[in-house]
Image 1 (cartoon, rainbow, N blue to C red):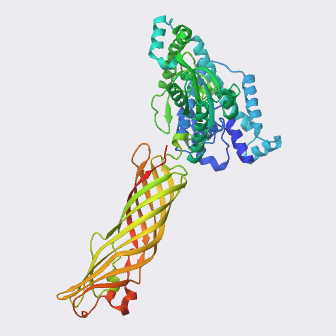
Image 2 (image 1 turned 90 degrees about the vertical axis):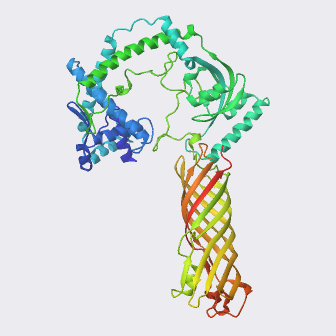
Image 3 (image 1 turned 135 degrees about the vertical axis):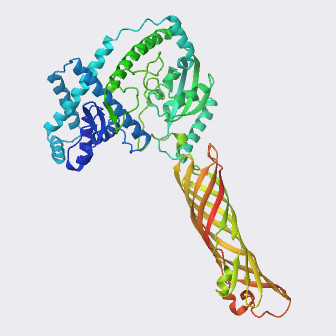
Length: 608
C-alpha cells in the first residue's frame, strides 16, 4: 500500500497534464523515449504513461490497460492537452505575461500538501522520496516548471477571451429558428422514480432477480399502492427517495439518453419500467410537454453569442498550431480541436442545451451528475451488455449438432492385421445429437444429450477371395457439461464433455465368396464419452441463436461383441470371419474412438 500511495501521490502532483516521473534507473530507458515534441518542449513516453494513469486515479477510477478504448481516449486527451498548453505558454512568453514567484510557490506548496495527504505520516512521505532516490527539492523543482507553464497557458487564454470582441447581437429570429430546429432540447417531463441499482459487473441472474422485483412492485402500484411510500422504502436514489420519488420538472437533455428515451415513451399519467445506466427505474410520469419559447429565449441567445465568440478563440488556437513544429510518436498529427487545459477553456458547455448549459447528463434527480464508471479495462458494461452471449442463470438452451468421424479407426484392419487388404469407405462416419441444457450459472451449463452414431462400411478382401463388408451404429443417452467463456459480445469459446452408456444397435457383417454367403447381426454395449472445444458465433442481434464449430475426441469401443448368424449358406469358408469364430470373439471390436469435427446450432430459450 505504501508504494501505491507514493505512485498515486506523484501522479497527482502533476497538473492534470503531466505527472511527475521518478528518475530511478529502472526507468531510464523509458524516459529517453520521446512521445510528443512541440517546438522546443517535449513529453517523454514515461511522462505520458504516468499522466494517463494519473487521469484515471484523479477520478477515483482504476487505470485502464494500454490498447483499450478508455486508455487510448485518455492518452489522446493528454497529448492534445500538452500540445495546447505548450503553445499557449509560448504565446504568453511572446506577449511578456509574467507570473510572480509567490504565485508559483503557493501553488507548488499546495500540490506538495495534497500529495502528503496520501501518506499516513510525514516520515512515510519522506521514506517514499528516499526509496525513489529523489529529494523534496527535486519534486518541488519539477512541479514548479510544470505549474509555471500551466499558469502561463491559462493566463494568456483568459486574456484572449476577455479581449475577444463581443459577437454581433443575436436576433430574435435566429434564436427562434434555433428553438424550432432543436425540439428535443426543450421537451420537459415531470416524473417520479424508484431506482433499483444494478452494479456494472453484475451477473445476469442478479439482474433478472432485480427485474422480477421491479415487475412485482409495478403490478402493486398499478393496483393502487402508494408510489411515495414505496419510493421511500425501496428506492436506491437517496435524493428522490426522501421526496417520495419526486424528481420534478426536467428537460430531456438533462437526462441520461437511455433514461430519457424510456421516460418519454411512457404516456402522461402512466407508469413503466425503464432500463438505464444505473439499473432499473420504476417511473411514474406526471406531465410531458415542451418549454415555451419566451422562457428559454435568453439562454438560447447567450449560447449563440458564446458559440460565435468561442469560434474566434478556436481559430486563434488553430493558428498557433499551424505555426508550430509538432510531432506525436514521430509523426505530424492531423489537425484536431484543441483540448481545454486544466479543465478550463473554449468548449465549456458546448454541445448541451442552451437553455440548460450543463456539461453532464443526470441520471435521476435533476442536477445529480452521473457517477464515473470504474474503468477496469474498458468502460464498465451496461446491463444490456452483461454477458450478452450467455443464457441467464436458470435459463435453458436447446442444442442440435452433428459430427464427422476421422479416418483411421478401421476395425477389420485391426483384426486381420497388415497381411489382409482393408478399405475404409468415405465418408468414414457421422453422428447426430440433440441436447437440452440448464444454465447453473451464465458460464456453466449441464444437459441431457441423446446421441446417434453411424460408421460407414468397411471392406476386406482376404487371401481366399472372401469379401467382408460391415457397418455399425450406436445410440446413447448421455450427461453433458459445457463451460462457456465469452470472447466478445458475439463470440464464445466452449469447453464441453459428455459421457453415457452406449448400445450397438445396428452392427452387421456380411461375407460373400461365390456360393458362400454369411450374414450376422452384432450387439454390444459399453460406457463411452467425448471432450472437446468449439467456437460459438451468434446469428442474430438478440443473440438467441448461434452456430457452433469445433473439434472433439470420442472414446468408445465395443468389445466383446455378441453375434447372431442370420444367413449361413454352406460350410464355413477357409478363413472365416473373426466375428463368427467363437475362439476369436474377444479379438473382435467395433471402435468409434477418434478425433471428430463438430457442427451444431444452439438456441437460447430464456433470454430477455
